[in-house]
Image 1 (cartoon, rainbow over the protein chains, first blue to last red):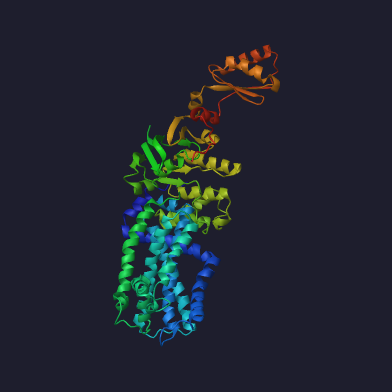
Image 2 (cartoon, rainbow over the protein chains, first blue to last red):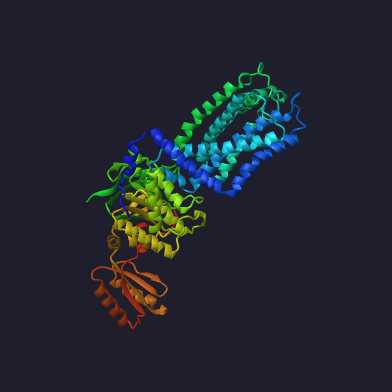
Length: 280
Length: 315
């Protein structure tokens, strides 16, 4: 065997900053995640088809039954589905990381002199990339059934950025869950279970005005509602921001606050968990 | 003598189970230490602690002079770990797996690719290198996992049950690989449940049970510890009782009977004890179908040391 000096890694590393290595290592992990993902034709198919099904299902099944005032339910609904789908994508971090843990890959990573955050950053950023694809598919489907962006161009860009930022934040919650449970079956249940009440007790599918007042308060302070309201606003759907709770009056600001808050809490928690994560 | 691994007083408890109750161990540079014990003895916990995956409750450890609890990052640059289950990505090819590990080891891209191809060749995986790992056999996965651990040319290699679950041919292959590594200067700490494996590979053996080291030494020293050689005789089954009484007088310990086989430990010059045994049995008119003088097996060592067989599971 050729004799690589054993400190080659240290020498090479010495010339670069910690951030450089975090990005370097995260990129490799993200590359591996995407390679793994896009090789799995089945997963790829369902990943593409699920957002389409969601949009068609809600638009055609609920579309006629839910009254949202004078404008069409589809324009009201599409932003809600965007947010829901992006939120659910957070669970893929739970499942993916737990699978890596069960297969011993996390042990392999942890035995390497790589940056401790890189496996998680790699995971959350590859999920972010998938989020972009998902949003493209959903937007095309939405446009095909009559949804239109009626707001400004920059507002629309901001709307997509908020969605991606929210998806990124949700991935970190998913990562913490994935690292905390004992096996992949539990990870997929635990990763999804909390997302149902989170996404449904919100303004995503129905106006909160129809809820009992205590539930309405909860729903309006739900991060999902702020994001959904921000999406509607930015995509040009008329919403009333003159009354109601603070998040409903300032949905864009509140969305940014939620994203920052979630990241500030869950990033360090997940990284700390990763540092002691073991396969058994 | 310099030690590549030096650990003192390692303890670790989980909830109500004490996994390690104070383990001391040293591995001289360029040798193999075999950690032998049944499931749940604390072998894996020891390896996980020494490879920086797990923090002990107390104790100190140095690997190639690096304090692994103070400088885990530095320690990770000089160790290689191959675990009980092949830690390889099933959805990547073998080659991609190795390149990924090499890149995460911060080897420049070109060097990572070179090392990957070199290791594929070394482990007979060149042909399978561009195939998805899902299609690999158990033995191939293990070899790939070991190759991943070797990307960095580690000074110290930790192998947790490297051949558990492998077929005999793959096991022999793995043994040869480990022997080659040590001849190239790597220090190895391996755990095993296979007594034969420790006997075959290890320069020193530590027998571990319930989180404690209960014996250590070379294979031969361990065998000495439980009373030298064994005489094993096969006689017609109806004469077993009579023969064992006669052998009891010659032996230095308890006679073991298994159907028509009688085993008795002897001390002193084994050869002359065999002559004594032959004379005694012949004098009683017992026909000897087979007689041999042999070293005790490590199974016998384990039974003597712990009071239970090595296969017993104590989880």
